[in-house]
Length: 311
Image (cartoon, rainbow, N blue to C red; front, side, top):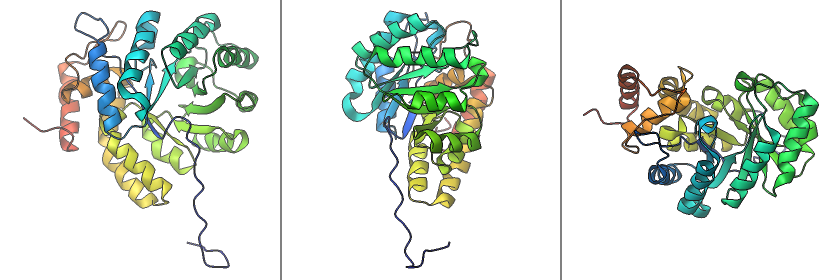
């Protein structure tokens, strides 16, 4: 390790973390009949906050936001906020491909007590970058909450251009990005240009993003790996990448079991049901719940990782 002329290493710069460091995009628990199970959501939120999380994302993609309704979304945010209080930042999904609808969701989330908004790039419609900017500014101006942009071209079909990120960063309430582009070098460049807080939105790349200066993670596997993610963040903060790699490597089989199929919401529900936190792993169509074979493979991974006892 190279030292300066005086032989002292500089102190690490404290990261700005407007929404915390370890967040999970929480599933929306449902009964076997398909109704939102608010009591189970409260239990799950409290469990996550007691196990490594200082933030939660509610009504995101993993929360099945395309198939939950406006009143359900608002009631879910309100229930979680009431349950965890000031122990965690609650970020509410408020994005769609309809700007007017998104504004209503943002207003409802604000009224329900959310600490911030997650705004996904408008999907399917494939607007121009100018359209994305105008859409996002409409949402940012609709409330006084801080905003986390969600860049996920695999679902939205369009990526936020560097110039778009720079333009949006000029708005005082747009303070962070959840990055699911898979482009770590591009993220590092955008962090430097915009000054926004960056959050990894892709579990397999969490360590890579953190090592390049990301403020934290928005995880799916965090449903069962909260303490491990928190430990990895602490190691990176301390400059101990060797220890961070050890934690990351140990987590990898569980991350693969939950995220490998691309069905994060489905498998995350199965995982927390295996831990006894949910009575049901029910999802709403077009999602279908995990099969017994998928659950068995997931159970094997959780047992091997020491997260579940093999009864």
